[in-house]
Amino acid sequence: MKIQPQHVVSLTYDLYVNKENGEEGLVESATQEQPLTFLFGAGQMIPKFEEHLSTLSTGDAYDFRISAEDGYGEYDQEAVANLPKEMFQGTDLPQVGEILPLQDNNGNRFQGQVVSVTEDSVMVDLNHPMAGQELHFKGEIINVRPATSEELSHGHAHGPDGHHGH
Image 1 (cartoon, rainbow, N blue to C red):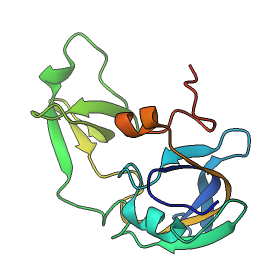
Image 2 (tube, rainbow, N blue to C red):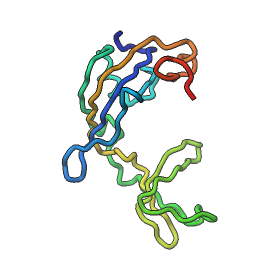
Image 3 (cartoon, rainbow, N blue to C red):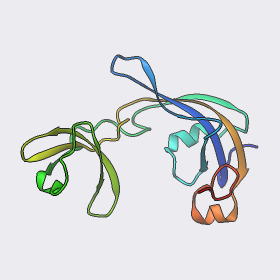
Image 4 (cartoon, rainbow, N blue to C red):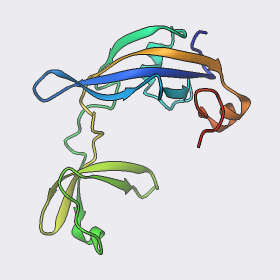
């Protein structure tokens, strides 16, 4: 079956990005046993990712690259926040490299990685871990099926076969 909006797509993927030594390294995978399943066209995925998949059908293999700009965005030097130490009262200070779950004033959740800890503050990098990276996806379309009316009303897939899995 061909991929189209309001269809649920299950696929495998290997995501490669360039490591600091300039060579490609595998950073994420979805396997046949645990595929990525999503409602196509619902805006859950990077738009360019869906665009590349839009001509494919069940059983097709794919291999494409997405520029940083079309992926998680360019690395933003400004997106580094200084959190006052008081924010962490009653808890241990985070370690450098730790990923912190944060929330902005509008209640949007996001993550920041701790880049340094000083006497009075914690520096957190708010860039997506893959910001500034070209994304290289390789994989195969395992299954394409029309979404159920329940999935369409919820705006997301309920698993490879359409049933709720818990």
